[in-house]
Structures are given as C-alpha cells and as structure tokens.
Length: 155
Image (cartoon, rainbow, N blue to C red):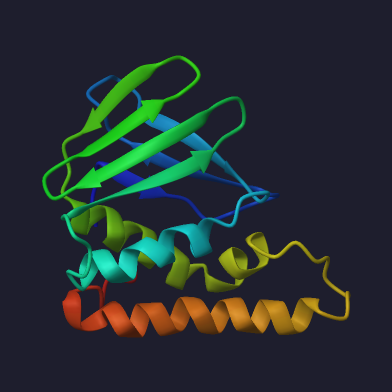
C-alpha cells in the first residue's frame, strides 16, 4: 500500500483523496457524493491497466468542495492541478500505486462506495437495484484487473 496516496472510506457524503506532495501535510482533495467517483475512476482504470490507451497516462477531472482538480496520472508520477488557485502539485508515485490504492478502497469499502455513488435515497424503488448494480460493477472491474497485480491488497 502506498504511503504517498490514500483514498479514505466515504462517510456522510464525503471521502478524501490525499497525496503526499512534498509538504508537511498531504494535499487533501475532498470528494463529494455529487460526483460519480467509482464510475469516473473505473472507466479509465480498465483501459489504462490493460494497456489499451494510446499513451500510458490518464486524466481525471475531480470536483471538490471549493475547487476542481485535474489529476494526470503518468507511469512515473502524478500531477494534480488546482484549477481555482492555478497551482500544480506533484506526487512522486507510480500510476500502478494510484490504481491499486483506489481499487483497494473501492473493494474494502464496497458498500460505502456503492452507496456514495447512488443518487437515489435508501428505500426508493430503484435504490436496491442501483446499489446492487454498482457493487457488481466494482467487483467485476476488480476481478478483471486482478491478473494485473491488484489482488490480495486488502488490509
């Protein structure tokens, strides 16, 4: 598990994506339930890990509390752009560590992440189906990427 990247368990509509960027405290991006985090991330993880992208990098547009971030993940490091403050941060970690950290969080806290990404309220007629579908999606991507070194990473 990378010490330079952490994706926390979602709680009360928030999760935190933290990067060590050389300062005394990590860059903490507060993720909101209003953005489909697992859908956004998983959609790019599969072609990246399987080598089906034209280049070995991907970009994630992440909405936070007060700003938006562009996270560019390359083979050797991660660049995080704070679009509001126009600041660039660099995390000296490999792409595989980023994918592994996110996938581990998604699987270890699957119920929490599946619930985090659903707009319906528990008890709504579509909620149970949407919840089950999201869990199945997370599990399917995890199993698809397992041969690429993501298995047995649970803590």
